[in-house]
Amino acid sequence: MEFEASLSWLALTLTPGIAARLSARLLREYGSPEAVFRAPLTGIEACNVDPPVMLYVRGDTQVLNSPSLSIVGTRRPTVYGSQMAERMGRELAVRGLAILSGLARGIDAIAHQGATAVGGRAIGVLGTGIDVCYPKENKKLYEKVLERGAIVSEFPTGSHPAPENFPVRNRIIAGMPLGVIIVEGKQYSGSLITARLAMEFGREVFGVPGNVTQAVSFAPNLLIKQGAKLVTNAEDVIEELPTPVRAALVKAEAVEAEQRNLLLVDGLSTVQRKLYELLSAEESRHIDDIVDASGLNSSEVLATLFDLEMRGIVRQLPGKHFSKVLL
Image 1 (cartoon, one colour):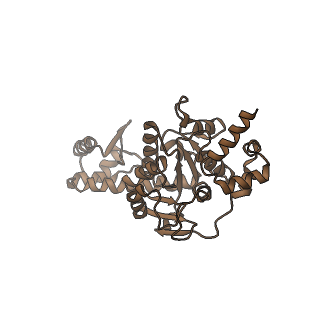
Image 2: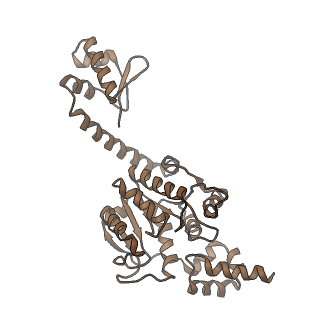
Image 3: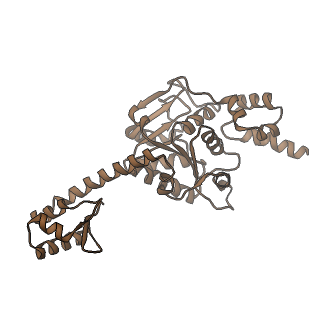
């Protein structure tokens, strides 16, 4: 019994994001470490979670109005965790979502690297002033995030890292985006705290499943058991987002794809361009209709459409229907 009690004290002191000051408040409120771990989330939040009075922002403030998702996890990821964080950051950024994280070592930084590598937007939420990069080895990443989005903090400029700042920072990571993706985290990780805050704030919570023999898989696997959406790629995440957000992302992706196709059109002949412009990606067109609209003979139209199909920018469907292919 004494051993179990000692473990509870040790767990409380080693839980990332719970510094001495917050621990003291929790112990005053609940009386013992065991009671703290049994306490409802709302009770714990009452000891620490309040909306920020003011946010300091460096960079593009407009990115804060964009749909975003947080990607968080352990500071010591496995190879698999690193790959999944980079993949999620990259794939979601390509789809038009801003990637939000704490710019910490490990999963946070890797997710931002994935997003910025493809020119995506990013938001870094700091536990320091917006002019203080922590950890220092993330200075280049800090500059990339600043270039592609914004750095945010509720701490005044010049504020240096302090243990009690990070649980404060985590509630913004949980509350600002549409949802939070947990990649890897141990049993008493800050990732679990962030995920539970997100649930309380009514945000979506996603878990990337991990190897059950790895300690860092505890947090996402537990969250999945408790009802978080299991995700392995960007599509798994996007299908859970609100309908207006999904519609906006699809529309933006279609516009970008059409722009890419227009670059290919520059290399087409006059006849190829004419037929290409008669087609749509949303609705197919029958060969007879294309012939009538083009003013060309059927043999020339079929031969040209075949050439466009070989280029990969036109698709033939059953019944001699044709449509554009958005790349």
